[in-house]
Image (cartoon, rainbow, N blue to C red; front, side):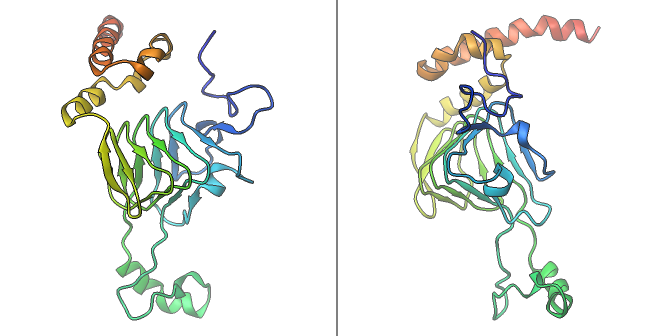
Length: 227
């Protein structure tokens, strides 16, 4: 048995289109997705870009790492804020013509981008979660169903609620840092496949030890490549 093909849009059984690897479907310059990240498309009439990336009007990007799992109904807002520094929050600038001509300069001067939205590796985003513009979700984090994430989420924590707050640490800060350093999502796919059961049910010490062996195995190849 081999690992799934990361270039396959539908990696499950033939005819099963619920699970979609996002990377092969990317067309927008505003979307960057790592291999093996998938979303549940069972309720989506269109593509990830059409149904999950909302208000992709500006320069802010959505950057998602490898091996992430994105549940049905979860969405990412890229540039959804109305200008509200003055009396009216009505978006005059979106309407071509006199309104846009009169207000666009004011809007641009008072509505700076919140920047890219960044999702790390091995992140699980639960059903109907809403990820707001400009946040960073760390590696190994879990976003609870229905959460509204408006601030950064540290690695290997669980965030839930509206607005979302960290409700639990999956591991101590020290162990979370060790897991981030081990970065199993960057291992050769053969190593990921060999150790998949340990990745699902092992300990931090086991993952760190495997990561050290993987790096040691790669070191000779890197050394020879630089000669």
